[in-house]
Structure formats: structure tokens, C-alpha cells
Length: 439
Image 1 (cartoon, rainbow, N blue to C red):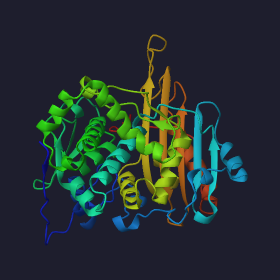
Image 2: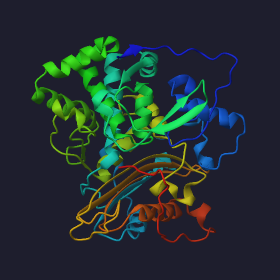
Image 3: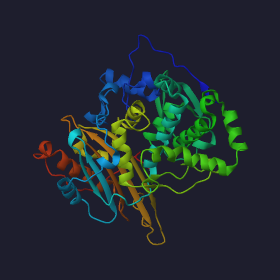
Image 4: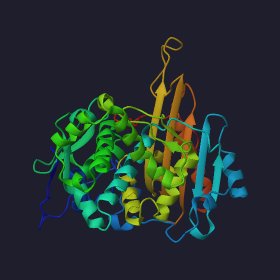
């Protein structure tokens, strides 16, 4: 059942901290109520040695800022290639199977943009969950148009259960018990109840498909019930899905996640989301239009996020915080060139093996299709800042190593003065962490 839950303030207790696999600044417990942040902060303040994350993962809430708020140009005016920059970048990509867009924003008054096959469409995988994040923030702005404080209060205090929407995903979620100081990782079950902030964190950080479907559901309910959403019970919500025709629900689902993208000038061919991330909701909500993403469409989102134009400036900043990586880094973000940098990152993959052709076809090395995608904002301490959207479909190969290698080579070009004396990076076989999955 959904209910408003007001978190008690811990007077005389310093907020604590540990490390799991997530974004959001580690000093964010008080403002969000995300329980795992309590453990992470405690470890940090108690000087507990922790080697799982690099230096760039320790920014606080106040350190995270938007980089392009002074730039008022339209997105079409900004995405114009710089010839010399594009020439340097395009040398890096092998050709077919690779697409990318890169924006160097180190000097906001002299942006440099490069693109390589940037309009080619790919199955976005978990990168598509960013559309759900935008939808939730968009609907919350409509419920509370005049108060950012009310929006964050509801995100923190409204708690909803998973039910059948959140089950059936292999990704685990971190569950931290503050009283027992115990962290466990397990799959979502129907009875799980978390705040909206915590579900968003599970969706973006560990890329839990169930959390994505739960928050997709909540965005639909926000749109359907408007201001009354904040008092909605689970029983009334489920009755709504039972009573509403399937085609109406499918259209609502499609509209709630895609309309905010269209308002940003992101076309259907640039980026669209076609449906839920788990099978359970399929009895009520169908799929429509399929899912697709392009480097250009994702770049349109991230540049306008930095401008503060995604819904509004405060919403843009909060979404950037939710993308901030504060634990082990994977794929593109694992490049050692980025260790000192703050990274705001989402990865996604989607592959298929035909084992009649190759019985030994491996995970993330599909022989039918093999999508791997990385979107990232990189901020170095020396004020070198840039955005990369990299999408690949290379058969029979785990492209995580190629993404990590390209991350180093792109950084070597943009951060040339800092990297010119460093040892050259070569592409090596990528080895997954034991708990690394991000479909």
C-alpha cells in the first residue's frame, strides 16, 4: 500500500556511508531517505578503508552542478560539428557496428562537437530507463508545479510496493537495515516496499528492471490521477488497471515516457521507449512502437540536462545526481583515465545467441545481435568536461573492453595536456566483476 512516510531526523548522529553499486552523492541520505547512503556515509566519515571506488566518486551534493546553464542556444544550434575535433575523434572508430556523439564542454563558450554515424538506431537496453526517470520527474512537476520542496518530499516519503510489476528480474538490489547495520543483496519480491527515491535509485544504479517497471507504473498513475496521486492506495491503483481498457493503458504508457522527449526536440527516430521492462505488467499494459536509441538523440538529452532544460533546472540537477556513479565502475566508465573524474553514467546491453550456429556463444557476445551502449558525462578536476554517447552492435564479442579502450582514447584527445605523459592504453580482454550485469 502506498502511504506517506516521514523519516525521523537523526539529531546527534552523523550520517553514515558504505559502498554498494550505485549513483547519487554519498551525503544524500538526509534529503532522499535512500537507506544505502546512510551506510556509505558512515564508512566515509569513520575513515573505513574502501578501495572499491576511485577518487572521482566522492563528490558531495553541493559539488554537483550543471555545466551549460548560461548557454541559451537551441539544441540544433549546439550540435554542429567542429571539423578538426570530429577528424580526431572519427579516427578512433572501426566503422560499421559503432556509432558515437561527443561534446567537449570544457569551455562552455566554445563547445566542440563530433559525431560518427550518430543517427543509426540501436536497441538501447537499460539506457532506456533514463526515459522513465524523465517521465517521473515530468509528472512530479505537474503535480507540484510551484514547489520543488513538495516534489522531493513526495519522492522521499511516498512508499510503494513492488507487487507483480517488479518481479522476474535477475538483477539484485541492495537493501540496507540501518538498525542492524546490515546490507543484503537479493532480487525484488512482490512484498518489497520502498520510497519513490529508492526505487529510482534501484532503477538507475543497479539497473534493476523491476524497479524500472515499478517507476514506469507510478509515472502512469501520476498522469492518470494528477494531484490525487499523493494519497493513492495500492488497492485503488490496481483497480484502476483492472477497470481501464488495455489499449488505453498502452497509449498512456507510451505517451507518459515519450512526450517529454518530444518536448526536448528528440524525435521518435532519435529515441523512444516502447514498453515495460518486466513481463508481469503485460496483462494490462501492452508494448507500442518498439524501443530505439541513437547517439544523437541521447546527446540531445544530456546537453539539455546540462543546460537545465529537462523539465526545469532543479529537475535537471536532480536527475544528474541520480546518474552520479558512487561505486564500482563498469565498461566505459572503468577506464583508468577516468579514475580522478566524476562520472555520470548509464550503461545498457541487449544480446541474442543462436546456439545452433555456435553452442559456445557467450553472454554479452551475441551472434544474432549484440548491443552495448554507454552514455556518460565526465568531469575532471582540471575542468576538462565532456559528454559521450557510444552505441555498438559487434557480433561475437563482449564489447565492454572496446568501450573501456575507447573511453581512454577519447579522454586522451580531450584531456591531451594532462594525459600526454601517461602510458599508452591498449585494448585488453574485459573481465566482468562477479556481480556485474547491466542489461
